[in-house]
Image 1 (cartoon, rainbow over the protein chains, first blue to last red):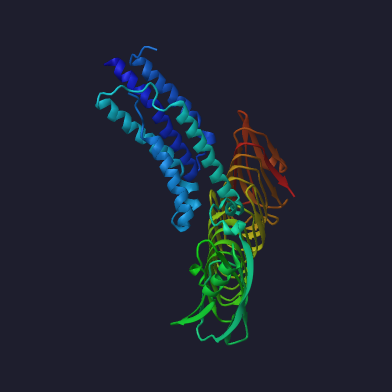
Image 2 (tube, rainbow over the protein chains, first blue to last red; image 1 turned 180 degrees about the vertical axis):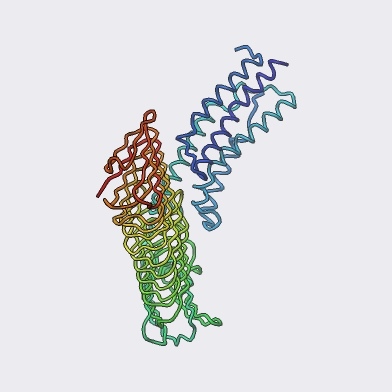
Length: 60
Length: 448
């Protein structure tokens, strides 16, 4: 079961990053928040997702 | 079994449909829309993939190691680069946009045939003249007359002379009376889609007529009329000597110019440069104008809103000039309010209240005479310089988080260092309040 949810996070990492990327670009388009300021958020998100994946027990 | 995702093919279909619609019905989907909303393609793609993975999971299928494959990431990067480039080009350089026009091959490869537009004269009983004009340049001049006169030249681009002749015969320029309005029709929509008709028209109208025009592309020159209401897709608009109100709504205009206007001016849409001179009514600019804004002698308030820049002023006996990186105001009456993201601002000789908030940029203010209203200047990243007359009275409160302070008024102002920055406070007489603040930059209070 544990392994399964680790798998799940692994599979969802890509799509979640993609959605976030889209949202950041949309923010740049419609508000003052430019992508040049917000891109590190993607790194943080990737790190957090990777962490969650390891903690939930998927063997690397 | 190889598990296939449906999203890749769907994306291809979407891109194909976009181009097809652009070619067949350009008015359904403007590049403007695509340049604005493309990030949602990424968002929807991600959401669909999440949905797909959930469905796979609950139907017990094995999950993929990675939700989005290397190849798909490459496509994401490609879409992002294309989208970013496209919205940049679309926003900053509207004059390039027509070059990316796909379709209408006769425009590029056909041959041009010229035809005269026979001159027509009609008594102009109606005060409103409507121009239903798709393509071509129009010159409208008001004169001391009670007739309307239309003439000019037509250019037909087609592959064969016979096609061009037919298109010319099919698209006569007509003058029709409809109720209170006199309508000048170009009938260009009757031409087949592989032939392009454009007409350059010279129109003379009675001086007190109002002009209402809608067109797809071409320049408008309007002179000596009572009012103007103009809608166009691209081109240059030049107006002179208008006795009443002016309204201009354009996309991708290279320049909107209005000189000697007695009524108010409203400019919407998008484009590059704006030039205003000698306007007696209120001026409103609300749209996306990325080029140079030049104005002189505005006797009523002006409100300018474009992208992240907002400028309001009460009147402008002098002149101003603004582009993407700079704003210069000379001889202006407040309240003046400016909010901008990245601009170097210079204000010379102002009266009344002055409030400036910029994110990045140096601010340089010299009131010439003693300031009469409160002054409030904030920049996050940049130097602030204030030049005051030697005998001005004021109450000053200046601070920088990081940067030096320079003071020409000596002991009148008390300087205090705080961390990497400092404050400068003090007063001379009972003058208006002056607040200067920068997060990072130098503050200079100069005595003239």
